[in-house]
Every structure is written in structure tokens, then in C-alpha cells.
Length: 98
Image (tube, rainbow, N blue to C red; front, top):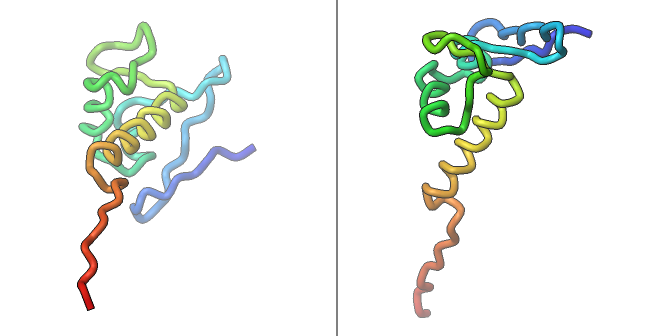
């Protein structure tokens, strides 16, 4: 099976790293950011907001995350942004009187 490919708006797609021997895919902050097409500070902010936790035992200055956890954190961040932005609220406008 070939690795998953993601288009990030860059001239070439980025490959998802191969799973480790335990069957899980681990990514660093930089790799996760490249795969999702966001800045590395965005992934770090998910960590600060507790949407994302590094794998226990990963070095503090170079945290490693599970790929599935990164995808969950991105979804959580997007849903929270929608919830707090007011874009899902319906606005009723007054109709002009004929």
C-alpha cells in the first residue's frame, strides 16, 4: 500500500510518514504543519490549548504526536472557530414593507 499523499498548496504533495513498528504514525510539529498546510505555530497552539498532547516520552523541545491525534486536534480547532465566530448563527433581517 502506498503512503497517503496530501496536497498543501505547495508545488509538490507531502508524503505521510510510514507507520512505525507498532502500526501507529508519528509526526513532529513541522511534519504535521506541512501535511496540513498550516504554520508550525498553529500546531503548537493546539498543544497549548490542550487540543493535542505529545506522545509520552517525546523530548520537550521536539514533541512527537500521533497522526490521528493531530487530525482530531485540527477538527476540534475548526469546530471551535466556527462555534465562536458566529457564522453558524442565523440572522433574520427585516423585510422592507411594500
